[in-house]
Length: 244
Image 1 (cartoon, rainbow, N blue to C red):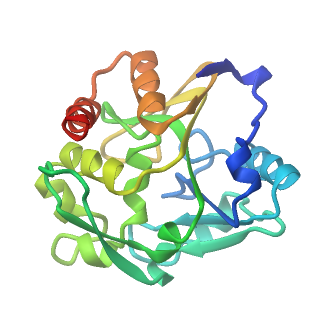
Image 2: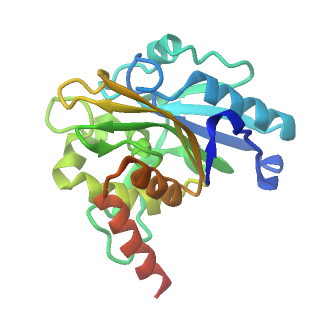
């Protein structure tokens, strides 16, 4: 669903009121604020809306591509919400989770933080962001839930080993392995990042919020951005295979 940003009100589904733990995954890979990272304003709105209907523990979880602590980035972005637990992927206990697809595209199992598996409701909140033409919407946002120490290529940071497998294939596999309940793309502004420096780029006004099931949200965001994305085509194929 696409709504005007000025009319956006986050209304949690009834399942949230029954949840014991809600996990929110922002895009916070750098200290550069919205629209390069997930907006503090949007995060705050979602958190406060959840608190109105639920006593669930609310967790924010992110990982730093450098493999270093995420907390300085949280601080720089103003992520200082009361009664919210801020966690770093690198400090979590990791569990190997099997890809449910009969024929995975690239990865048969993923190492993921145990806290993701123990949460009752999962939300991915991403900016309307493209870097070098590649989208970083609600599903690509899940990549930094994976521990850098498991997936770096050689001594470099980041998730180079997964990029070597084909990042679109990896993201499609990740969608099925970590079934997030809700995706939000904060498209009040569109951010066009540079490949040589993803934190720097051009900003365009768009004035929308896209919210719903992550695949549907990313499909709408791709249409709005005027791009075609391989990972969305692969997810479509995977869905058809599971329905057979």
